[in-house]
Image (cartoon, rainbow, N blue to C red):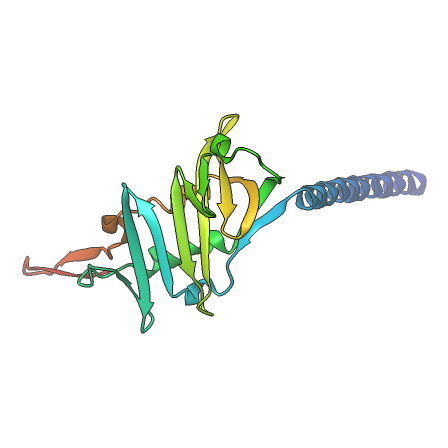
Length: 203
């Protein structure tokens, strides 16, 4: 009986060692793959202290929307009566720019038109969007979003003012900056009390 217990114990020990070994090897290769992906990626743009951004401008429905942050509140330029939803501006938009990672970087591009950009007298225009940010230190940054990658519609071409490289970035950056004025406005919540009276207020 003792021999059987010893055999079972040995078998269980071997099994535990094999399982642990499998997870260690699997974890090793997973970490290695992540490191390789990181080594082959580029930071196309980064925005520090995104919640302290002072100004944001972008294109939506062929119009320029400019937001200015004063006294810790966002206001749409020219439409000061609109209550702006801070979480939409900061979480859904500016947070996307904390670190824009690119899996491909192209230098010495001879024809920017192939990627949806046009450069005249050192001024760049882009086919999809132009995003301008004034950060917490009053430094202005401009991001240009060109055409979608013809081989992968989930990727877009991007340039940054002062950098002649063309980057391939995820479409989430493009999608985040398509919000209209209505999308930016804080929603109102309607409640009904026991007497059937309704009241509205900000969510």
